[in-house]
Each structure stands twice: as C-alpha cells, then as structure tokens.
Length: 76
Image 1 (spheres, rainbow, N blue to C red):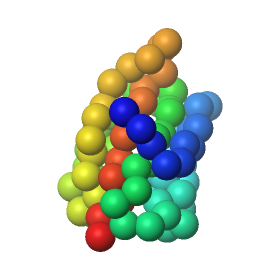
Image 2 (cartoon, one colour):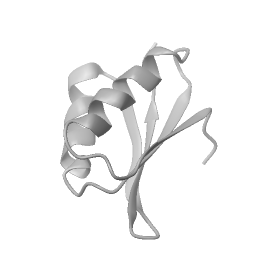
Image 3 (cartoon, helix red, strand yellow):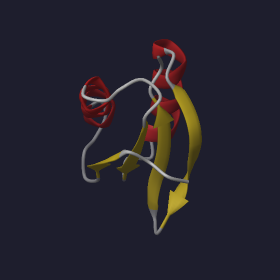
Image 4 (tube, one colour):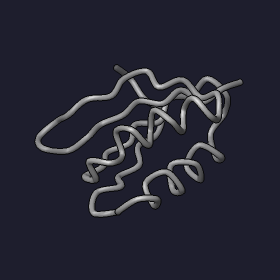
C-alpha cells in the first residue's frame, strides 16, 4: 500500500512511539497515510487504542522483518 510519510520508531519504548506518531500526523493533511515502524511489542495494542481514541484509521497492522509496521490514515 502507498503511504505519504514514514516514521521509524525502532528502539523507542512506550509511550514514545505513540507520542512521536502523533507529532508526525500533525504535519500531515487529512486523508494522507503515515507508515510507522516500531520494535516495541506494546506498540501493537497502543497503536490500535491511539487510532480508536483519535479517530485516525488504522489501515493495517503487521510484522515485517521482526518489526511492527502500521499504516495510519489521518482523519479529515
């Protein structure tokens, strides 16, 4: 899937992946897609909760090469 921006949160522990994802989304236009790569296993549940609480769409959540990869679509 195509994305407009990528943020690599590898090596960051909770809550930093979510905090920095929020900052990355702030610079984007509504409807754009952010790809987030993380190594923290807690980021799976955190990203789902973040999307639900903020209204951004979690388009996909999976693993690639031992890392967690998420695609978030900014609301608006």
